[in-house]
Length: 218
Ligand code: DX5
Ligand code: ZN
Image (cartoon, helix red, strand yellow):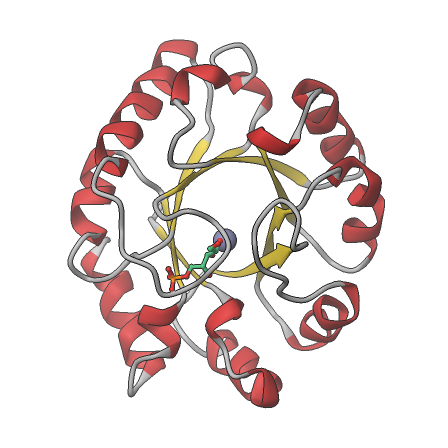
């Protein structure tokens, strides 16, 4: 499988959302990465259901929804109904993670788990086979445009080892501060999906920036 690029809609121009969605549709990007923040789990509020439904109307690629919210279980069927294909919850927000993962899959979505920068990969040892994708946060969640945390490379390698050792086929996604400067090293460490927000939407030509990033990692 080729390595994937998931532009983060958080960095799009919300006053020109349809234009930016079409840009991603017509680019070499693979997924839409959609960040939901509740102002409780993270110190910021992004957008909710009506905006995601609006994105879904135009999006022609996989909807990768990253929930930075407490009590994600409460909204699993809602996110399915508004178009999520992959639903990622935070390890730190789930008391009964195994149950949450089963509920996401039972609702017909791929199940992802995100780890904050301080959370070791080893906490997933007993559920790794139940996880379709692990999202390693390479910044503290809550904001776009932060600097990449270098310790991420080590975590990707550890996660890759855990996945191989367990015979799981879990994807590894990296979220936060991804640019052309760290993309290759992340892929070499074992990553499969790179989320890029400000690097893509802050570029003068987002379409070619996506194409260059995609070519760099494949
Ligand atoms: C951070 C979000 C990220 C963010 C990435 O909490 O989960 O998806 O949009 O943005 P950049 O690529 O600008 O770090
Ligand atoms: Zn995200």
